[in-house]
Amino acid sequence: MSGDSVEMRQGELIRRGAYPEMTWQAIIVGWILGALIAVSISYAALKLGFSIEGSELAAILGWGVLRGVMRRTSILENNINQTVASAVNGASSGIMFSVPALFILSKKPELSGVADFNVPLMLFACIAGAFIGLAFVIPLRKQMIDFQRLPYPGGIAVATILKSPGAGITKAMYLFGGAIVSGLFFFIVKKNYGLEDIGVGEMLGLPPRYSLVFYCSLMTIGVGFLSGKGGFWFGAGGFICYWLLSPIISTFGSPDMQGMVEMPGIMRKFVYKPTGIGMLIGAAMGGIIMAFPLIRSAISSMNRASKGDSASQDEMPIKLLATAVVLGAACLVFLAYKSAPGMSLSTALLMAILGTVWIWIAGVIVAECVGRTNWSPLSGMTLIAVTILIVIAVNMGLGKTETIVSCMVVGAAICLAISQASDMMLDLKSGYLVGAVPRRQQMAQFIGAWLGPCIVIGLMFLLENAGRPPEVADQPVAAVIANGEANEAAGEVQKFDIEKKEYGIGSDALPAAQASALASVIEGLVDGNVPSYRYTAAGGLGFLLAISGLGGIGVMVALGFYMPFNIVLTYTIGCVLRVVCNKTAGNRWAEEFGIPIAAGLIIGEALVDVGFTLPKVFEGLFQTMMM
Image 1 (cartoon, rainbow, N blue to C red):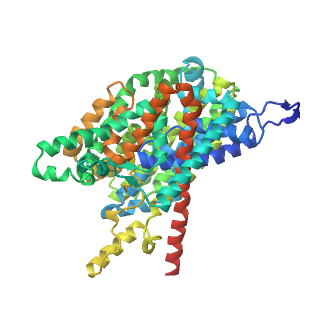
Image 2: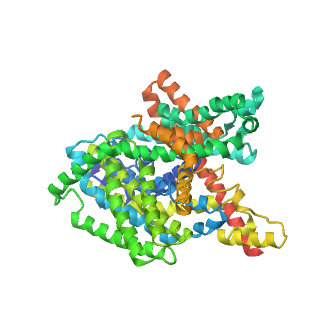
Image 3: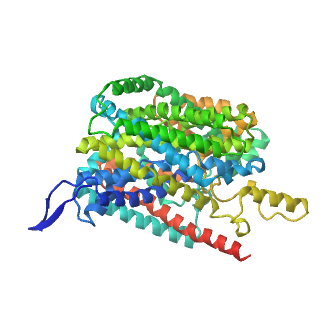
């Protein structure tokens, strides 16, 4: 840690001593801001089906706290802060695209036990995966950033914020203002008045098939604003469903389909949602194909890095990183072995070794993809990994529940490792541009990486259990199913049907689109009955969109098919506002004012909703204890 002294002279801060970089202030502020960002972005990821980068938010908030409140002025110190914070937030995509699949699968009685997994085991698997991913990718820093000079657009954006401390404080004020407005709007409109949607179509006298209903959410508008013009592909998926396909079906479809099309919720459940899942799978596979040209470059990077000077004092010692990989892999063996009854040591060893190798391959590929295009094929890499693991587990004779849980323990570790690897390289790029010491930034990433899984897994359980009826609030899912079946057999009215779940992950309130796609694939694999009739055509369409050369549009259009159209419409408002702002006020205005405000809209609504969720959970637990 570096120390410094500051004195005020003629209204200016005069610093003496070493320039602060790796300080306790930066680490603690990074933990706090990272937790706040992780909660907000994880919540948004469950709502909208995709995650957003947190490094820019961390840099903006860092200047607001470090400079605005604590009167600290070091750019390098804020760089460490944003590195720690973004490392914490790395779990928002790494976990939210994988582990929620267990809760979605548990809605089926025969798979109800998968939601009752060993939480500490899953937590340690995620942390081990994060450390393995970082240890594999750090030796490539010099090759990818110093020699190849990969652009890493996100890293450049963060460096720009870090180099403008005065502007950073102003942006932080706009961000806090947006958060206050969003939080108050959510509290007044949704909590006090219970207004979830605005039925504009009904007001205009339009037929129900057009589903012209807007979701009351400033957070959704904020995410659309951040996405900008590229986000229109997400909206395009929804408009194709309800404004193109539904009118065509109502005119040329069978009588049954013509009747169904006037019930948008039914159409989504039986037609558009399954189509969206198929497209997500196809788009994920297409993303891997599009990454093939980068694989050769990534392998070349590894070869050149292995021949370079690994003893540089700018980097963490290579022996220490190799030790981290070995220890992390050993942990994965133990965790896989303990993840399910009947798991043999040989199967656990095979799963852990394949998982570690895939972390190495996928982490490097994703780091290269993010460096060149700012786009990550994370979901596709995770899908392939889980598929391989399930094939191994099924052939080894494990039961369905044991297969799913054990594969998801290792799969979640892989997903988090890939997420951390790409985030590390992006942060190292910003550090390179502001003159940071790579070794200190690498240490900061490790310091933050362990906290994210603790926060995100806790949030996941909080949101999952928030709406559970008090009589089953503290019961495992398998017990709820068993009690319900017993009551039904005895002729009693079943109070709670988990297959008709109207709360938590997988419900319309928290659709978790990419985790739902993963759940569908897992279910088909363990049953040996992948519904090809349902997914083939849609998967082909998603695949073609993914290889179109427009990075990421396959996933975005697929999400538009999958998500409720009221969310898609509100999201599109944000995209339109961003385009209008860019054309009327200029790109600079959007970057200086619009983006911080939009980020605040996300944080405000997410934190208020999560804050209201906590009392519900505690109330349910208290009522159960008093019964």
